[in-house]
Each structure stands twice: as C-alpha cells, then as structure tokens.
Length: 252
Ligand code: 6PG
Image (tube, rainbow, N blue to C red; front, side, top):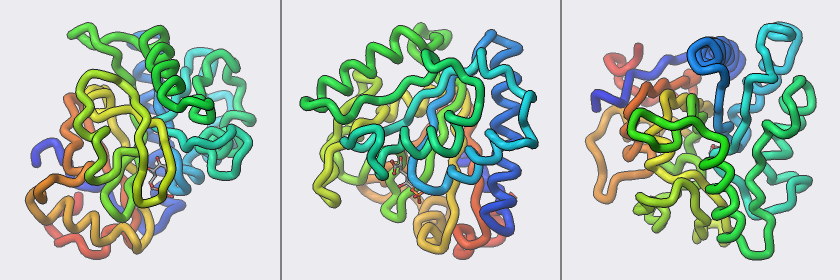
C-alpha cells in the first residue's frame, strides 16, 4: 500500500491535464539535466489526449529540448499506424506532429506485423538498444504513463491474461479475450522498474475501480493495477468523477 501513493484529485479533466503536464515537464527537465535524455512511454486511450495537446501547445513551446527526448509506447493495438484505434496515431495527431522531436527518436510499436510476436520481439530489441540501464543493469524508462480501464487493466495488461505472469521479456504480445483482439504491451517488470509512473484516471466509469484500488485490499487474483509495485515513484492524477467513491481520508 505504501507504494500506492494517495491520488491527487482535480475538479475536471482540464485541471488534471494542466497539473500532469507540468509534472511531465519537470520530470523531463530532471532526466535531461541528470542523464542527458528523457525516455518516456506514452499511454494510449483517450485520457492523455488533453495532456499531449497541452504539451505541444503555446504554453510549452520552446520550453523543452525535444532533441533530448525519446518517445515510446506502453502498448499498441494490432492495427496499422493510420488506423483510428492506433495509439501511435493518437499521439502523432495530438503531440508528435506538433513538436520538433527527431523522427528517429519516436519508437513506434509495430503491432501491425503479420506475426505479432515478431513485432513484440522487434520492440524488445528497440528497448534494449535505446533505453538507459538501471543500477542493476536492466532497461529502465524515466517515465511510464498509464491509464486505467474500468476492469483494472493498465497498458494492455488485462485481468486474467497470461502476460501478467511475464517476468523475463520486457514487452510481449497479448490476446485480449474480452475484445477478441491482439495487442503488444510492455510487461509488469518493465513498468515497475520505471523511475516514475504517472497514472491519469478520469470519468465516472473509473470511480468503482479507483475505490477498489484505494479502499480495498488486493483481490485474488489481484487486478493488474494492484500489481503496480514500482521501485520508483508512482503518482495518481484523478478527476472528481473518477474519485467520486473514494473515502475522504484517501485523497491528498
Ligand atoms: C489503450 C491503453 C489503455 C488505456 C485504458 C484507459 O491502449 O487503450 O493503453 O490501457 O490507458 O484503457 O483508456 P481511456 O483513457 O480511453 O479511458
């Protein structure tokens, strides 16, 4: 529970994005100052859109040396990069097309390969060749961004999926039975090893899963987001709708 820091709660998604993007910029500046680069895995879905739009907007123009930033993805759907469901496409439209990041520093997950496990293996190679190492010599992100599904999934780590048991590979292909689709996702050891994890959660459909996380002990088996036991720092950013069922003493 100690790692599950108290959530910061914001009146609405705009305020949540405004606070989270300032923290994102702080972490980027710290990483660049300390190690010369910032390696961040973006989350997919809809919640991070506002943060990405703010990040590429006028408020932060010229405030970040994008030549020092490496962008990765926490997960990707098995669709072409131009597909409306592609996390890469969403990030490209809201952020990557609007900032001066070198194309060679945007590391897309090629989940649309004919053989998806090949795509996962190829991405593992990218992580091994591009990411810095932890003090134990293992690949380590400076920041992993996550969203949360109403069922408690993070990235494409869904409840009862075998990828939750993956402890060796840094990224793997996963069949998501509930949606009958394949995905590629970074695995729990990779997430938990990050220097920082930033979880953005918004909307009334997340209120119950947030209550279970912050007000109940682990279920059996634990939900994916209950397996977030980071060696670094984890920060939760919720809007009031997602925090609606939280006991008062849980909030920051
Ligand atoms: C994805 C994400 C997934 C997402 C959650 C929340 O590829 O969909 O990685 O884990 O973060 O499902 O999605 P929303 O932000 O759309 O609620």
